[in-house]
Amino acid sequence: MKSTFLFLFTFFLMSISSVAQKTTISITLKNGETFQTHKLSEKKDALNFKDEKGDSQSIKFSKIETIVSTGKKEKNNYKKRYIMYSKSKGDLMEEIVNGFVKLYRRTEFKMSGVGAMGAPITSTFIDYYVKKDSEPIASYLQGSNVAYGSYRKNVREYFKDCEALIVMANDDNFKRSKIDEVVEFYNSNCAIK
Image (cartoon, rainbow, N blue to C red; front, side):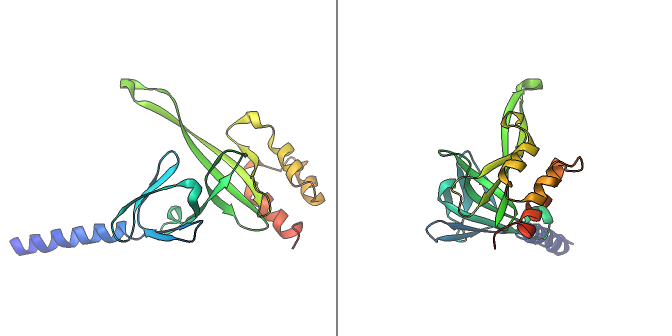
């Protein structure tokens, strides 16, 4: 009985370990150095993780070229890059569409108040940016902050060289939720190849 319990306990621990190890994250720095890990955490301006040797690493976002995560679950599959969104500010952003124009999603968590028992309440802000490889700074397209202007106006301005897309932007069916389709349309029909 004792050996059966020990076997089952060992099997349980190994299965938990194997599930946790299903996601592989590859980090490539701008200097070409690469790291592999299975788990990381993003702090204010740095990425913290344990490398393949088990050593703790902390790397500033600005030194990162790409982070590629692959796993069995769709939510574990992503590619992030460090993107400048103003002359002095940049952040890690998830690449949503890859092409002549790339679409990036920037997610930011901000404390928006204090709840019961003094627990902080955080809000999630999601902004979308577009960028061509030749552009040093990404352009804001839409997001949680309405102060940046209207979505249609931003689309018409950024994609002004694509007449068909401008016509679509004036259509009532042109939804903010289809931002990835807008960028894919531009890449397929209007991008300079």
